[in-house]
Length: 149
Image 1: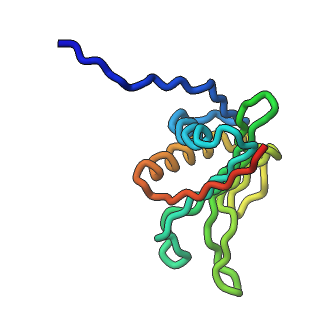
Image 2: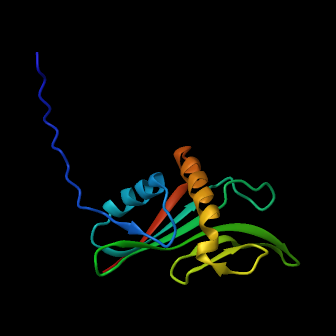
């Protein structure tokens, strides 16, 4: 007995996401899922946070990712920034722990000077694998901000 499916096969338009370093396939999938929910926008900023993260106990650090659609309809990763708390004389302050700024072509790690983004290839690969793993554990809540074209 043959069973027919009434489900329609969804055809999605070709989606290209680029940046100046290699991108991990699960990371592309994660971003593509967000982009496909907002097909008519110019930019998307994703703010990932974990309610359990504090200056005292640490945890999964907040992450911000900005994507922009270019005129050729390709999506470009502008930056990926991970934040951490640092101790100052005035208390705890949120600051950049890691910043992959593809729009400026620079990478940064807390306590170091900025360097050309090409030097950050291995760290970006490691960061993507870790982020995708944490995301798969439902570690983060995500706030999405969009900018219309």
